[in-house]
Length: 444
Image 1 (spheres, rainbow, N blue to C red):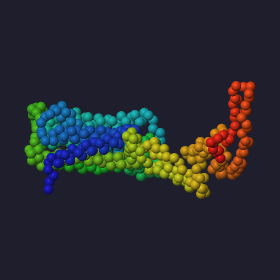
Image 2 (cartoon, one colour; image 1 turned 45 degrees about the horizontal axis):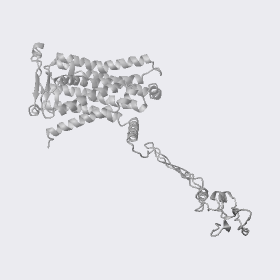
Image 3 (cartoon, rainbow, N blue to C red; image 1 turned 30 degrees about the horizontal axis):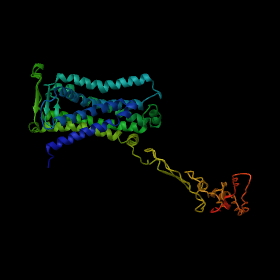
Image 4 (cartoon, rainbow, N blue to C red; image 1 turned 135 degrees about the vertical axis):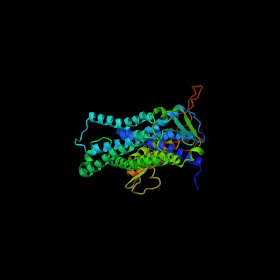
């Protein structure tokens, strides 16, 4: 049972968007390492995936010429990106070859600048040249296919093979030569390979082999796929005889608009469109498998997740912190995600009584003696303390004997009231202890 055509369009649009997102994730790390080959690969494949997603969404169920200028840009970018992927693989293999055959440990800034200029000339200059040569074999402006979008249009002529279709084969052969020489140099100098890698900043041993694996796969698939594309064109489409540019560019400004029913009636065109679109998606996913799942990538993912969680206020424990235990000490630590403060509890080796467990060593700095002083027995005579004394747990722990209770205090009988006849008033009674006043209670 075949998948319905609208579902196929949605699947291609979803995978194109996914490929664009995944291939752009390692971009920052390659910018830090000045890895020109991978940066060019991300630029061409990521942009092609984005254009493919937009075209599929805009022309999902129509073939109307909504944006002619947009189609002019995307069709020429399609020409350049199909050559640029091979050029990016060549740049990567060339860099790996120079690393494996380097004679001096230190590389000057002039050498680095020269290498970057050469890589940009290969990765950007050759695709731009292919775009500039597109006019010489172009039939008319462009075509619009329902469910696909804007498509470049050129007849199956020998000029198209000479100026565009056959280019991946020589580029792939040069890249394969660099790859073979790199492997031979590596096995010949594998003892000094760690020193060679250390001479290049931001290049690790694992990253070198991932680059080598990506470049080797690109080489293995570039030449066979280019040959398959040439054979497919020669067998399915008749050769257009070149009769001059007046004939080739006749009615050059026209735009052919084809519905899905009409263009999908041609099996060769259907196979070509499927091959072209899924190849771009496959290159994006392959690059992410090599560089988006590495250890350094997972480290960046954890840092990004921690930063996002901290911004939104999510608090959790990291695996690296968690709980730490040393001997009998049990000390929960705080997490990097939140600002949680957890008190530290220290387990004592000796068992103490229930009252002794309250000491001034608690993290809350609470002492039972302070509570007792605040709630001491009230004496109406203004004495500094009561006859009843409760020993502090700290004093007990330090071996200080509690204070002996005071004996009961006996007061003399109250004196007789003094009366002075010469005074019209009676003098005030002297101050006496509270215990001898009527209706009073001694607090003992």
